[in-house]
Amino acid sequence: MEKYTISAISCKSELDGECYCYCGLPSPRRTSWTWLNPGRRFHGCSRYREGSKCQYFKWVDRKFSDRATEVILELLEGLNQPPPTGRFQG
Image (cartoon, rainbow, N blue to C red):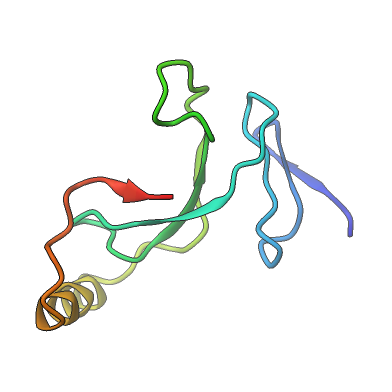
């Protein structure tokens, strides 16, 4: 599959989700569970929990509408899931 470059980042198509951050490490697709972006997918530096991260960050999904975000939060509440913490999951 042909590669393309976005802001000096090496990525294959969004379908396979294969990206590399500025550190040259794989940047797996993750899901945000913040209040503002519940369920929204992104790529970020693999070292985001360490102090030596490169600051690479790229959303996979477009921003959800306010209503879609509200529905996701209501569904999580209905499943007795704890509310988003303002952090994301890998």
